[in-house]
Length: 332
Image (cartoon, rainbow, N blue to C red):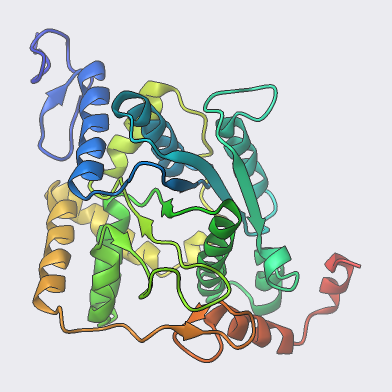
């Protein structure tokens, strides 16, 4: 009977997609956590005393991230203060369940898995009552992911400001980043490769010129395959919501995801190869710059134009003729 390629003692539990090695459960858990630790250390993501907000959606990626960071901090003494930050986009039947999973992860009474403070910020409170359900009812399902992405990014900034966080960590994994590289290439948006392949992203300026501080974001799971994240969650028996957003099937990203999975089937290293290619393109085009950041004249948030994208989208939504069915759903 074959043995684990690392300990040479226990039977293998899985074949790692990264290198094709067969490893046992314990060795896999150890090496997965160690690789995340090496990513953190080699990129100097944390400093002692930092307040770090973990963007928690209740899905597998953010749940694994929260548990791994908590374990690594206990083991390596990073000296940082973790908290959970969740965004309520207002998607009935989806976000309700995932937020419940986040609360269980945070350890709100009577449970105490991680014991982390939790801040929940909603689209409705920030963007004039516009939940994603209301957005979709107004504009339909084409292009709604644009609204959600713009709103969520600003909501993360505002939530991090409430927590006085110095850094936001997100659960973006290797598959996510490879998909984004493909999307930017397909759209000819080479300039944005700088952001999508960088492990730390931030707007120019330390705190930003606006009323809301610009908090850097980083991706400790940048080189972690989605399949391995699923296996880690399975072996640790983590509590997360596995359902996708009800509006995600209409997203452009889905086409890149299907293509990437086909590439991975033929060549498992394709995911990391694409990321490294994006990094190489970034190095080759260091002269390419994103627009200079200013301040939104409406909400005071950092923006590269006079009015930020979120305020432009809210204004666009307010000019739509809202169907009569919406009147009953509108808050009084």
